[in-house]
Image 1 (cartoon, helix red, strand yellow):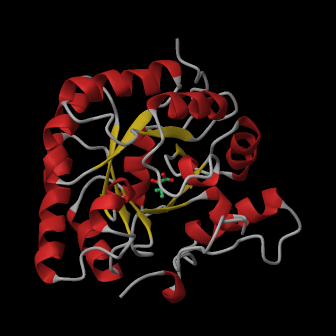
Image 2 (image 1 turned 180 degrees about the vertical axis):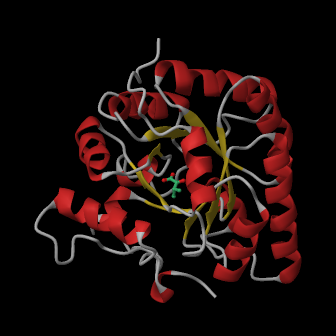
Amino acid sequence: MSIHTDVKSVTVATLKKMKAAGEKIACLTAYDASFAAVLDEAGVDVMLVGDSLGMVIQGHETTVPVTVDDIVYHSRAVASRCRRALLMADMPFMSYTSTTQAMVSAARLMQEGGAQMVKLEGDARQVEVVSKLAEHGVPVCAHIGLQPQLVHKLGGYRVQGRERAQAERMIKDAASLERAGADVLLLECVPALLADEITAELDIPVIGIGASGGCDGQILVLQDVLGITPGRAPGFVKDFMEGQRNIPDAIRAYVAAVKVGEFPDEGHLFK
Ligand code: KIV
């Protein structure tokens, strides 16, 4: 049984049409029903139940401890008030190490959590998983650039793709993931010119975070937009509560800034 019943909801096809029409896609993370209602009302196009919940909800240092059960729990809550936006849910660390495991995890996120798209981190090594999910009717967002689930391998959170060889690999990976059937690409923490190049190369929508205003859409973590990031906020983050009376106004200001291309500005991206 699908939790979504509104036929006017944003779909994968809507996102593709938005890219073709040059209409920016406004995305935000959401973790509960109350905020989902506010975001939906404010015109957010895509809500992501991100594994960032490990940090902003559960208080962990990284996203690594988050489980499929955690995402299902929060996704159900968001789905209950997500009427128009497309609901995307993160495949957590080690929940897609094989095509079989990925299909079981995706099935749980969609059937129990009400997600309409799953997001997974990974470059060309995820092509087989993306292809299998796509073959079985699972809409997929492939997340490249900085992959926070690799934090213990990377030794921290850093801009990715500054060296030409890495940038060229990323361009090839993006094309491979699109060919494998990814419906959306998410680019995190990459130089703006590289983000622009990838966005221009792909037919599928490219959503940026710490990437470029030239991407087809933007996403931020809700707590960052509300100025309540635990610890130090990343440099690409903007506090939209500044100058606003309340939370719904701040979310509307974020959506408007993305739609008219005012966010991200030069101060919120990487060279
Ligand atoms: O988990 C998350 O919130 C994310 C965003 C940072 C894109 O993946």
